[in-house]
Image (cartoon, rainbow, N blue to C red; front, side, top):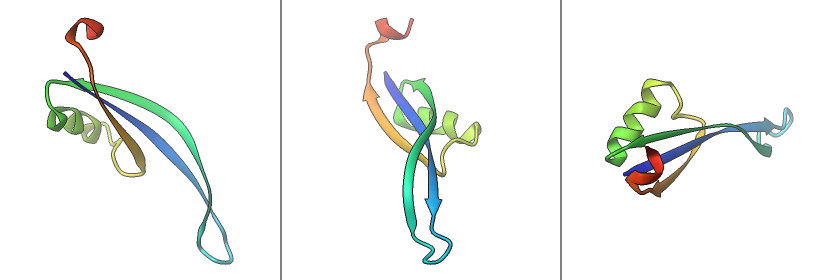
Length: 65
């Protein structure tokens, strides 16, 4: 089983240069599925894909019950 953790990336952009000055983590959400594609679909369906950092993990089925 796969686990996808997505974390919103708050980006502070300089008004003068237009460059990213600071990046902080916001809310995190986890999605479980048998494949990476299924986890990705769940995240995209909840509009939590663009602007989020992604972290993949393999988890045992026992831990998700």
